[in-house]
Structures are given as C-alpha cells and as structure tokens.
Amino acid sequence: MSVLDFPQYRKLANEKSHYEIRDDRHFTEKQIIGKQVFTIEIEAKQYPEILRIQDMLDCTEGFLLSTKKDFESIGMENTTPKQA
Image 1: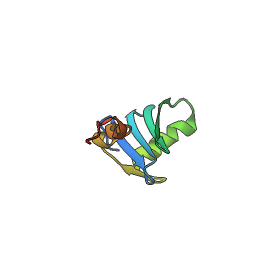
Image 2 (image 1 turned 120 degrees about the horizontal axis):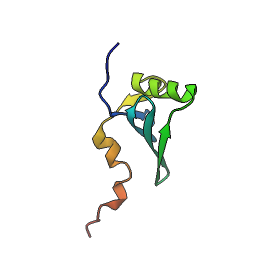
Image 3 (image 1 turned 180 degrees about the vertical axis):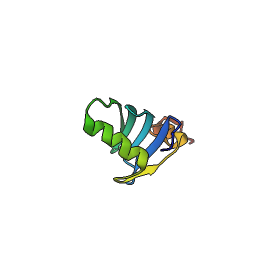
Image 4 (image 1 turned 90 degrees about the horizontal axis):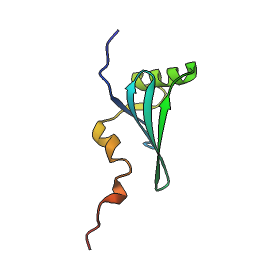
C-alpha cells in the first residue's frame, strides 16, 4: 500500500466540482453552479463519506487528478480587474 502526501487535489470529469483532500477524513469542495462558486468543508464521519474520499484518492467514479493551482484558481476568475 502506498502512502500519499496530503493535500491531494481532484476534480470531477465535468469540472463542476474541485476538491482539496487534506487527509483521509477531511476535504474542501469548490462546486461551480452557473457563475457562482460554493465552498464546502467536509469531515467524513460516516462510512459512505469515507468511501467517497477513497474513491477520490483512487481516481474512480469520474474523479480526475488536479493541481493546487487549479483548485486555488476556482472562483478567482471574476476578481481580476478588467482592462478597458
């Protein structure tokens, strides 16, 4: 069994949800709905939540590898001053 360094970054294949996995029980999700971004902090306490984190780490169920840069850029698109 390999040991992962945390945090790990994942996203859904449709790129509507991005994840920062801090450890095997905690993650942050940035969910894109329309032009809004919702940030959700999750602590996995129940078995289905724990399995979801394992699926994310294993890149199953439509999860893809991502990067810290990608995760941090979510929601920043509208904060950059626009040039006239």
